[in-house]
Length: 255
Image (cartoon, rainbow, N blue to C red; front, side, top):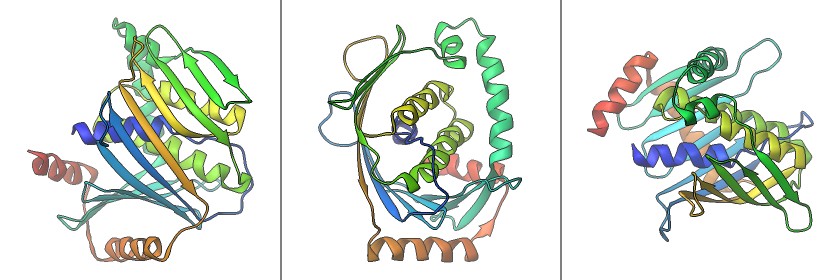
């Protein structure tokens, strides 16, 4: 569960949100997540973007997430695979949106200081164009990012849609704090058309509680394509179950 929580925050703070053209690109993101001062990653993942579909592989987990973004009036959807149990389930972006609305309302009505902040986060933002350093600071939580300009504008919407929805999916499925501060980071990256190379998250202190590194490659390899083909085959052959059954099996496996 700790690994999953780290993964959730890492992708959230790596949110590459931009404005964009509609043509789909093929590219990959490698992510490594470090807890505190650790030198060895607590979590590693590869995310593959191909023809408007995104395939997310967490290296230390049997689960795979496949995302197709919303198109017009058609909601997007996640297909979640559990390879150990050979089952799958689907979650639409409409359902995610409904739950996030309720979560924001709930958090805003709590007495807890952080929950109130997370419901409507406000940061002091600074961006150094020459160095690419982006800082979002508040008394409760600070993000410090090393960024570089986006190289391919055609990838911007793909990145935005996946990472924004993935952030919210994890809040729905795995719990943890509300995702809205991390979505605010997405918006800041969009304003500056920047890609994060390294992100540090600090909670009411100077030392990072979480650090993530991100490597974007503007192509996918033969091995990547094989992983995609295998995921597509798994969708076809795995038994579909309800969201409740899927996550019940997940929790049972984690004991």
